[in-house]
Picture 1 (cartoon, rainbow, N blue to C red):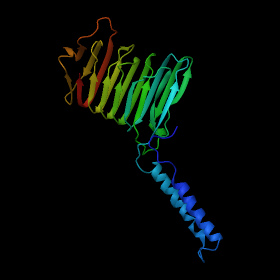
Picture 2: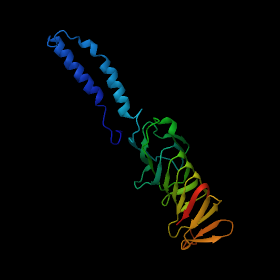
Picture 3: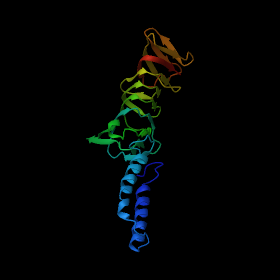
Picture 4: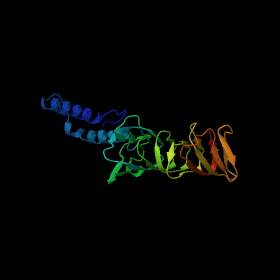
Length: 261
């Protein structure tokens, strides 16, 4: 699919057009004694400029969109090693698709299917090193997902409020994490940031228990209207549906703050 916001490969056609005109003029002896073949370094100039503008040597935010149909898949894992790229995740509105969204150039998700389980993997190492387009993903609502996200210099914004979760691990080196809790999770959700804030939002009615490991340089700020606090750093969401499945979340940080709303 075409890159979002791409300018297109216009330098090569322009360079070839100019050289073609000069050769044509030379053939009709309109260039005097000038030797047109001396202009061949222009091809190198055009090639270098094309590389620069395409983003191999200059920062760019170009991205490509994608979509993968669900087929016979009944469960899935999405594994993202984003490096310094920001990650956004939400539920898909369109039925029949497994995953859709946009990705930084060169790192289309690699997918493997074993029986009815799909594993999708996105690697920063597969992306041009100065490509910084956000990775925006939409996940199917009607199957359980295992979510694994890591960054060393990037933000993670994950809205799981309409997604069934098997379990999740989200870790950042330098970067904030924002999580909207899911309605159901079979395993724990683990969030960790070395240098950044963690913001957890629990929709009204969701039954969520958060265990926070605080320290001298990592503080937890919980909205008393939304959470009941217990010893051991345990926070239980208020106004929860007693029949809803319990979602367990654990958070840990080194430098930063956690905000529970």
